[in-house]
Length: 107
Image (cartoon, helix red, strand yellow):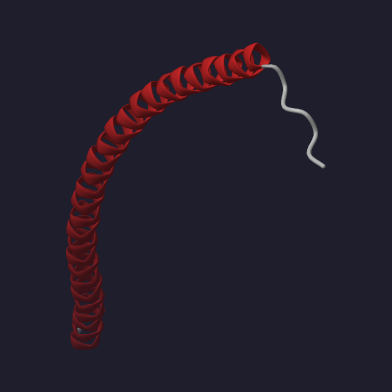
């Protein structure tokens, strides 16, 4: 046998309570969605800014690498000049000591 049905008024009251709860939940959901959408917008904006900063940093990096290569080339040129100077200085010393020896021999 089935349990007796609750009185009609009680049933209506329960339905109204459930409906009120559902409405409240729906409103909360709307609020959460609004906040979430706002946060998403902010995050997208931040990501865009980071992307831009990243691009700028990569460009700076390229410039710095180019500058380093240029400085390395200049250093190579300087070393080459120094080496040539060193060699010609050594040759001069060698030649002048030979000249001195020849002069001494001639005297």
